[in-house]
Image (tube, rainbow, N blue to C red):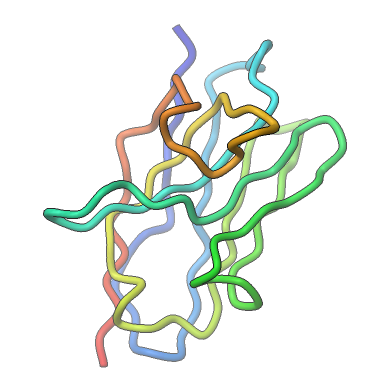
Length: 124
């Protein structure tokens, strides 16, 4: 069973930056997309960013466009999320996931492999 391990979360002031990493325990065959989602208590999991692994095409949620960047290092089986200009409303647990489909690259229901999550806290 492949495992996804996130790292890089923490606390930062508004306007600051963080970079999250998601390392897969091995190459994930059959998963066309890697993505980042986030969730706060009482809310549904929200799609933040995804990347189509073969071509590197990227997709972003409206709330993070222009501030967050997803990238991949295939040699390291790792996906990154660079988060700039962070806001208090970005505070959440961030999850890495593998799976996805062309019709729903940011739909959490289309992903079947999940990491354990990493906390990001942005203070005002």
